[in-house]
Length: 602
Image (cartoon, rainbow, N blue to C red; front, side, top):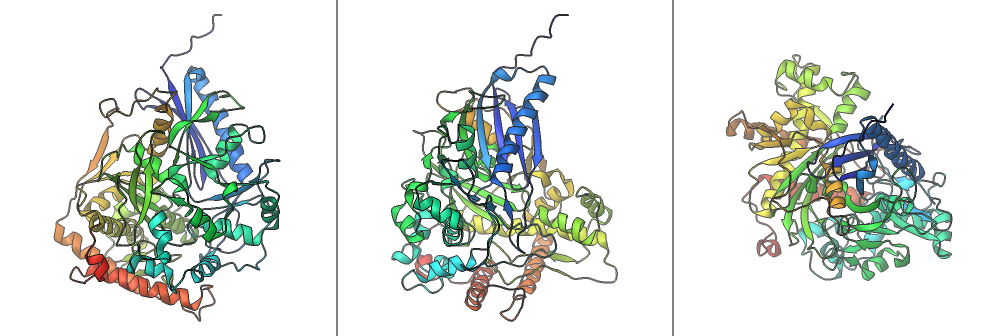
């Protein structure tokens, strides 16, 4: 019997989407942006101590190979020729830190991350230099907070600065050496970013120390680990990263687009272990094994930058919000760095080619979004599946005055308040699980509103609509609530895989590949679902102001006497003061900023 002829769909592009909870490989048609097939593998998280979360870099790598192989098998079943896959892009969880041996290819420690989704309880964990560490072979995940003592020790080395986190927002960021870190990186000194995790590894893990001494160690975020491994590993693997991932390390100068010698000296990081920094769209190397051997890896973006590209936010002022475990709101600020006066981060958005200009973004993050739904499912048991939350919320259509502040591990932007803890308030005898479910969805929307307000003040031009993506956007109640609470339209693409799409676009557009045009006239029209506000502006403001009252009630729960807290007395005090400043600034428009901020325009 004659063999069935393979379908010729033109050039295809694959994308590795490596996240905190899973790895996926997706294949797109470069002419239509249609998703043809994909495969997903869940990633285990290890919890060696309360508040610590780690992942095995080798398991992550194996999951990538498995996803590629399974997706190629599915394409074969669809009669699609995998030889048409012309490039591969990589999108990854950012800040997660891996150190490995370049001679053996073995990780020297786990990827370190503390989850924002709580299992039992999620107090902030602090690990001192002398603390025991888990077995080798792991990496440091993006939200791991074990490095708080490392941050405190580093901040003491900054001349004249006893409260660096607060000073970064309320003293002049461009004054003297104390804020070189902020002005060069766009980031505050924080446990969140890779440099501090790497410093912790150098201080605490003998295998890492020894490998550095013997010039065997390589450092990278997840993208670097994957690209090095996929392009040959010990047999000529390419050790590189892109500008978006580099900009989240605190070692990278976002103006010169180079590793910064002064920053590396401050953190005590040897520059020879750092990857080469490349653009987000160029050929880094070729796949050296598996079904796609010989295919170039030619795109690399941190996950939130990839979503910005996938949402086609290429114009100054365009923004997107990704709803996942947390929420990440990015606004394209064009070729200029906008330094926030309201608690947001300045970051590299993308650089789509070696000779192409760099674009920057403002970013605000909400720690708990989808995680609150899992908490209702796993901890309270009021739903059996995450999808049930929409049904419960729809039954009542209101929270009946109930407000839920899911500050399980403190509040992030714009408050930066570690002493906060989750509260549910406004309860009456009438309140039931449906009202709590509705309040949980509202909490995600209120937190997004706070970030958006801060972004509007920094940019000076209010957003006319918000583009959204991520797993939670399938919840229509949530999307309508978001439009009501923001009081602007919320726009959702019909194809939700925007993060992977962004990585595929970068890969397909790379010089030497050239199968995906990023010219505005060539970009495929995307079908959108639009949610318009359905309440009046006054009601929206009343609900928002009541939410802010609830937020203030959540603050100050962790005190220096609390056995839960391992923060130093000083850090609690500093962050409480900062939270008060930020809250006052956000609700009192007449409040005068410090003089140096009054004279500056975003």
